[in-house]
Image 1 (cartoon, helix red, strand yellow):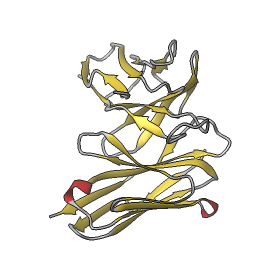
Image 2 (cartoon, rainbow over the protein chains, first blue to last red):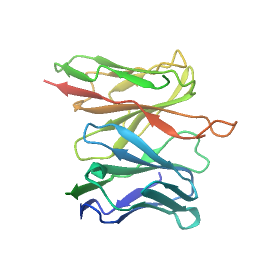
Image 3 (cartoon, each protein chain N blue to C red):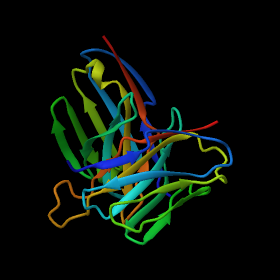
Image 4 (cartoon, chains in turn red, yellow):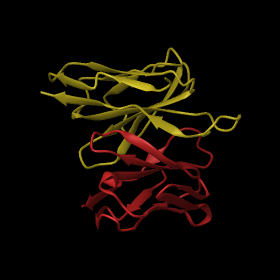
Length: 110
Length: 118
């Protein structure tokens, strides 16, 4: 099956710093999403981005489908950005299964 | 409000007992999913259903069972055959691809159910 690798596994930032999270995948995909899991376990949708670039406030994401990776940028980080960031993908031609990476745990210190 | 409702949020079970976790959605989505999350780990797919009366095994289906008798409902039963059932269980549904849906193809999650086996 498709492999999804996220890096780095852990990241510690000072408030105000910028960061880049990466998601590599081993096959062509027709669905890619980024999620933020808050300390209570809730998964928040950040981006649905199988290709191209999107921005939402301090967050932006870019997926280069031909090179099989996606990047999530967090600018001017805040303590509320802390938590775990997941990417999830669905292989092209597969109509159902979405597979998650292991996540990047971000801690933003005041 | 439209959304995905999971219940109960917290559940304790004795070894050897079956337990059923509820997942209901009023988003009119065809596809629904169950994932399991262990502490410090990513999400692993248990079962998914793309249409009523049909479902497929995910990567870790052993010891679990599901049904999909109604579009709105996708309950998960954790059976006594599941050797390590203590985990956080997340249900999701997905907007259909194309067809003019806003945020087509996107996955949305409920708030999860935490199961502890005593």
